[in-house]
Length: 401
Image: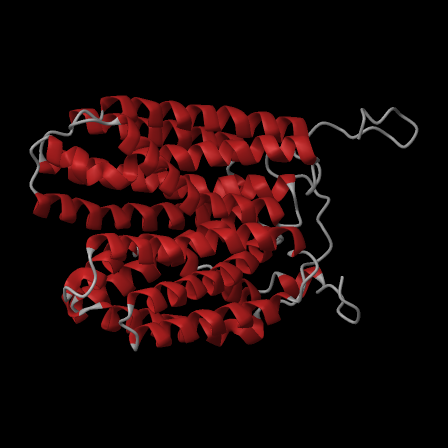
């Protein structure tokens, strides 16, 4: 811990203004992932960059964000979080501004890497901060809702500005959101309170359950995100393989965002009142069923029903998975690493699908995705159950720990 910086007391840490600031800081990370298709269109819109170069630019940003989240997680409990949030937002805003003025591919690639690193810093600190709140499940639900609303607003504005005018106007919109986000810095806590010791909604006794339960739970969250990555990025291709028109696919994907907003609002209302394991079971079986419905979605109306179902249960699960990570490790490190698995899971899932699928037969990948969701549920339940076992007393054998 840095000298001279004491932990914020629990009550001020959980005040609405502090939580609002934490939620604001989580918007840029999910936005970066959700905006990938729009950014690729904007990079190629004026013909200046090829599709391959556009994909590399977005990949560099995601790679930097993931790397920074993983590298920052071990020290997240020791840093001045407000200062690091400010640093991350400054890096991101400066890179966005520089990107608007740059058209040379190698230089732009480096600048987008810096932007991703800055977003990764801010998002890492925000996720760790939320995980230390008194009600992490509910607050992550609020975060999911805010993320979906912010992404919807930004994408709608970018569509109005015009994605075919190059990356400048699109990144200008993102820059404005970044500057607005920075307004929350004064209310962001510098430190987390001491780790809570009260039991969670699923009976887990401590906010630090040990390495093995934590790794098992993290493995479960990773499997869940891999399951999403195997199918969601190719939902449009699956629909087109069923003969559904591209315009209808776009409408269904836009409608899916409403499912995510509803899920976030529901989790915000329920919070810890719904047992975490029961919530994860509902969410896991729900998304598995939604993915399997893709097998019979042969017209646009069916797709418009299925896409929001998948997005709803995807976003319903995330706060409870992050809540589970918060219970297994109250320092926020597992929640941060779990969040870093999101872009990694999407990328790895796409790679697996591209390797296995030949032609337009996506049935095996749909089945694999559904199985991964159930395996993820089993893993996180095992982790939470193992973490809830009473720890040995001081005079008892310590089981090697």
